[in-house]
Image (cartoon, rainbow, N blue to C red; front, side, top):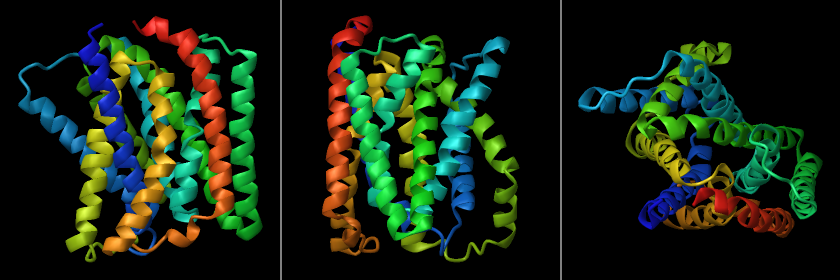
Amino acid sequence: MKISNILWAHLALLLVNTFYGANHVIAKGIMPDILSPNVFIFLRVSGAVFLFWLIYFLSKDKEKVARKDFGRMALVAVFGVAVNQLFFFNGLNLSSSINSGIIMTLNPIIVVILSYFILKEKITPTRLIGVGLGALGAVMLTLSSGAKSSSLALGDLFLLVNATSYALYLVLVKPLMQKYKPITVIRWVFTFGWVYVTLFPLTLRDLMVTDFSPLHGVVLFKVIYVIICVTFLAYLLTVYGLRYLSPSTSASYIYIQPVLVIFFAIFFAYIGFTEDYRDTITLDKIAYMLLIFAGVYITSLKKAKYTQPQED
């Protein structure tokens, strides 16, 4: 494997998590007053599906998918699009952008656990300590949220489901990514995901009562950003990164998301681009974030030792 390919894969994942970091703040400001979470997801997935198929029709190289692989793509779409998106947006709507950024850092730990059962990757005692620390930080964050608001705690729980779903997606999509081009995989995954999201009963209910007249100016720009950068480009770049890196390595980039969320929360509030969420940045949340960081760091140390040779 060329060093340049690995470098570009790392840069792709860094850009993806920058997109996500800003999204925690931007998407929070749109829900629920302008768009409900379910309608926002429908627009996001619909826009991405349109762009992925547009690339396909404009491309001369139309890669075909074996019939036996459509079942796996449909399964991957459940966790990578439908469950992932529905629980993230509904969780973000009930919780805070800071909480969502912190909870996302559990993803590498969840990937390690799922990789043990699905890919048979080794879990050592040190890794178990890392998993325990990360889980403790997540539980304390959720309990502290529950003490303030039951809806906030429910939002955190939804975000935990989202993180688990995305981790499962990273593990399950790897074999497909090694067989097909990134655009081929993600096009079909999002197509199946669009079907799931559209058929979700609450999506149809919310679409019937949504007033789309506020979608102009800055609000429209934010929605377009979520569709193009956070969905179309982010998923494509993630799949590209997975082509050269392991699921655990890819997931470890979520480690930087809370820092990016805090940065964008402060920066966007300063320039007046979003509402001011700086009051949600508290010392106890930073402590829980550092606890999760410690767990991810310990887990990643053992990952580098045992799984990195398999990538070369």
